[in-house]
Length: 218
Image 1 (cartoon, helix red, strand yellow):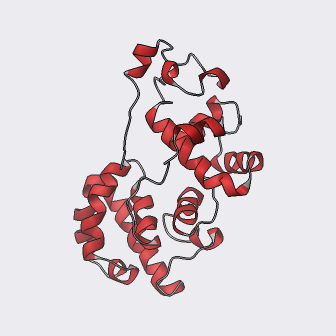
Image 2: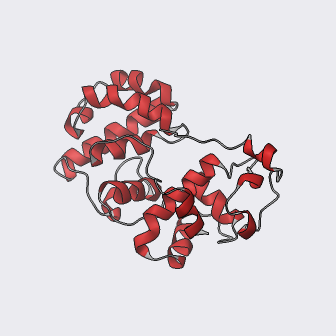
């Protein structure tokens, strides 16, 4: 199934726009409960005004809230991104650390966010268990676990470590484009013959084709 996904999504990648590890870290925190597209529309103005952790840590919270309001939950997100910026300034010399055990000590940063940053900014393999990843590995019968940490561990044992980051991208892309939560496009799915959940959504090719979202989502 992973090979089929690799053939289907040869260009799979993180759909958050970023230029530095700090930008990716902030963008990933902001992506909670909203779309990557919305985050990508929001971050240019944020990073133009606050390009470094030191700048964002010293910002006026009300100014940051105004910039982040379109992403939803903007007060909590402002607290998180300003808090992680202060932590980077005070504990890591203004640099984003390249170790999971350090990243998860930052405000608003859990294992999912840490693995996104490690895999895409530092080329350190990581499994990103977001809602799409968790839904698909359950549908595929790869795991019965619901807890993201247990899912990460179990799936990690099934695949070579070097494949973890790309596996995450492929599953997330497939979840966004074809294997939707409510009505997956089963009749248009390249994994149909191998998927135990085939039939959860329309199997008619024409009906399923109308459900496919081609992207891009960035």
